[in-house]
Length: 141
Ligand code: DQA
Image (tube, rainbow, N blue to C red; front, side, top):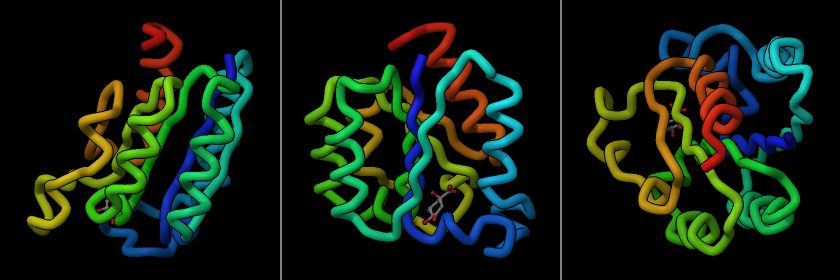
């Protein structure tokens, strides 16, 4: 099973960025725990602050991995192109947000990605990525 994780803009600052919202753990450290927890899974991980690069990653992974976990960060709410990219590929995509976007500003309540994702996990912190892995493993979608 190959699972790719794609994090969008500013998520390279996890651990330092608004820790009251996003927690104090950086993603690389979290990924190590995830790899130990799921030794049977081959993980690929990319973070990008660039919309085009994220779209290129999705297109490259299409058909080459069994599932993609996508936190589009702010591009979720702004990028028709990111939503189109998810719609265009056939590999299942699970959308994850660390914070509960529905408890925050109104602009965070809309997503160009959700309508094309297999499912959405919101508000459970980094644990959301683990839940997404479980969903992809237990019920390939
Ligand atoms: C986020 C929520 C987005 O609204 C925000 O722009 C992010 C992170 C989350 O994981 O909670 O950068 O996607």
